[in-house]
Amino acid sequence: NQLLLFKEIMLSNSVIQNLIINNNIDEIYNIMLQSSKFGMITLEQALIQKLKEGKITVEQALERANNISQLKSFIKYKG
Image 1 (cartoon, rainbow, N blue to C red):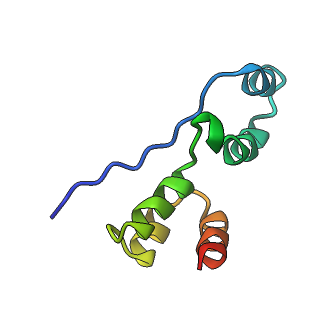
Image 2 (image 1 turned 90 degrees about the horizontal axis):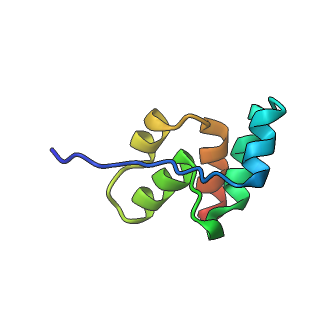
Image 3 (image 1 turned 90 degrees about the vertical axis):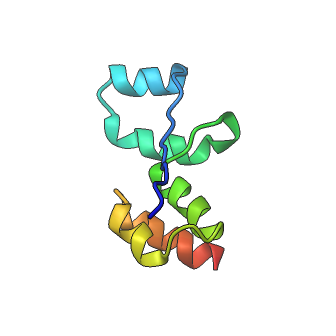
């Protein structure tokens, strides 16, 4: 058995800060999805990375995802 780390990274920037201040928490996930070039990563993006590396199966990824529909769309899109 092997332990794997799945990390979700949100960086504090003015957009994230304003979303938090204005209690628009539900919008943070979409900002994180759009901000991978700045180092942000969602759990689902991390799961897809491990899936592509062959370190987990689709079933294992689905068991660990917070946003199953997003993960399924990544799997379908990435083929």
